[in-house]
Length: 465
Image (cartoon, rainbow, N blue to C red):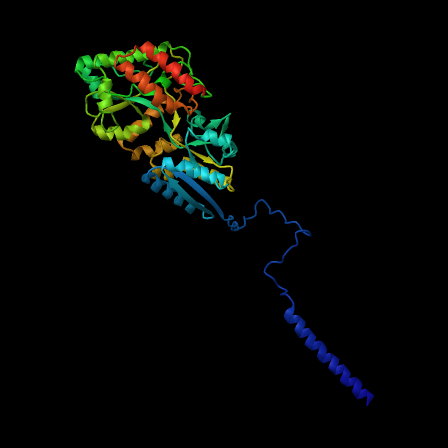
């Protein structure tokens, strides 16, 4: 009986072992994996022999999602082109999402002030030469130099003259989006008809007066059709002498020698009296505009304008006109050119931006992508990248190409840019220059010497406040 009991126990145990074996075999891992894992702490990967075939590349991990905001001011044409470029950039960088806003110039700055106060200033913000230094002083912008140094922002095709306007104390806080400069636009056919030589790049105001008189004497038209009253010409006059209209800190005039200004004022009176330029009475009654001035109507051979104005000026005059831009004349005894490169506007990265690396990538794309600039079409000014500017030339109109070629001709032959005009500039222009200096002088109520004395005394008072 006990023998049977023992036999049953053995059979029961054997059956139990079989069941346990089946259960364990079902839960255990496969014993023939396609590649056996190796614990990194127990075995380092073996080096492949130099002649071994390279393994197929593994797919790189997807970049982490990034969001950033961009702001600018401008026209509807600028809005449309900028939005298109933003979409192009995002298509190349699927992990980056860009939101944006835009406004008119007048509305833009209050919007930025509100954003800054709330700590959410746009990552990339369009900046103006008159404003960006205050943003730097307030600690709202970061230097771009590290991104230039590591190659994120490529400036290898940009001249220092085109870049320097965005520096404060030697550091780059704003990158120029388009270069601008002053010029006299001349009608080449009028010069040829009068038998007058085209101006040399280093011509002086003495040459300018002689040229105006010669054209008037030969053709009976104005030599110059307008713009001589522009205060930026006074700035260019003194710039050619190594200073400027205002001091670097904007608390005083930038010159002490008044003789060059007396000579310039005297010249403008002589040209008016000789009818080689329009009279002040005519200018007051019918202020010249880009679309309507003596050069446009064929009654003058020259007109003062900035390079970004040439397209509108040429369109008004007629695309068949033979126009050309020449540099601003220099003072007698000049030590440097009267022209400088003025940034039309900038892009900056705010200190409140959480994704400055991606912001720098976008600024580089905006600056160096030919495809992007074929959409933008130099609407913000001539691109600072010579490679981009050259690539755009085949698609430009004659008037657009003229500004490109003129600015290229100035490379290496411009003066350093002056600091922005001080806050008192508009007050000086409105309440001193026009009513107390320009009008009385041109209407012969005061002499050019008296006009200079009034200007220097009254302007100095406003600047020192």
